Length: 568
Image (tube, rainbow, N blue to C red):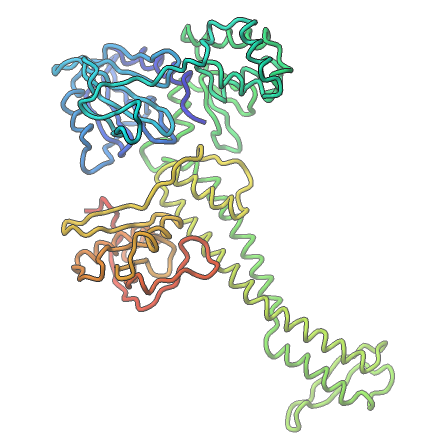
């Protein structure tokens, strides 16, 4: 699921009706990849989200006032304050069939365009002068990253290259569509549409084919061009006229998809009041305690179910583990039966004998249908079986306990997650371990976030792992043997490295790193937390352990109050 051209059309239609003629009263950087605008129009305030997230890029209205989420404004953020605040929105437009939304602004400082390009992996937000020169962008792209489209201050803005190999959906004919289908008869018709027609995303293609054939995965050779064209023209005719029917699909309480048109090929369709409302339901609120809570809930439940299964397995393993006394009793019973087998009468039901001269008398039950020798063999078999089980069970118990510790770490990762990719990464980890059997609900796969980097006033660099994978990176890629390593004692949480190379680290830097280690742990809500400090050379991966699972020694504890990277 991603922000496609038809979604952009619906957003432009919605924003144009509400915001054109309005005045931008405030600009905020919600996070390093998201710009927020407060626009006063039609006697009320509206809040606009322009996200350049590489997997969840989007533009929509927010129902809540947007708050600044960065300490130091970016160069683009400073320019927005100067040139966009106080500007009037003269138009909102979209180049035909492109995922680009342009806000035209009349400012006391001149005429500008605020351009959002909500395209996965290439998303950006740019401020462009009236002469087409880029003033700055959220993501600066140089010639090394893209030789065709450079997004740097002082360079001309280049729109996305035209998709010349695709056809205009409103110019299609039965003959043209038939040629496209006949050229790839064994391919799915939806794939032909996605590849060959402008403005058609995979989701829209599935909907069109389903409405035309009753089967979203119908083959191109089995699809009638006229039926397909009739649906396509009906839907795109409505889009062109600004007639949208936005909504979401919901499964087990979780929003799984959104669109500007009814999704008849999916179950659980629910109309919404507008396209922005659909987007907010899918991506979750940007502010407040409920942000991303809907996405966390099914993951939290999967972790709880996995923990319950593992706890039962552990109890079963522990109950089946014979202790030393039981093992010894089985062996002694077999040996005593061998020693006294000729004294036992046929059909005897027990043997009473002491294993040692001064020892207690043992009462050994017998099977009267077996000979004393057969009874002895049975006791020896039980002894060997219990001994083999005892040899393997401790390893199984240790593995289960290790798995439980990993699930506890994932549970902490989930609660500390601040965005969709981090939640999705927990789902991915659960899926790899066989604990997540349904589809991913936290959005599409994409690039993985790196550890958090904090630079202190003294110039020391602190690396913080905010999940199990990042912990591995921090400890064994970012950290050198002589660097200081920190971790909250006895709870899942962040691995923290202070880059020192073995040099002296001021006590205030160690305390700051400890505060961060406490904050990014399961104990973040405690009043005070013990944090262990040692050199990274004393940290070792657990053999066969999951990512981020380590042992360490030579630690020194320090007690701190948990404080995040914005805690001072």
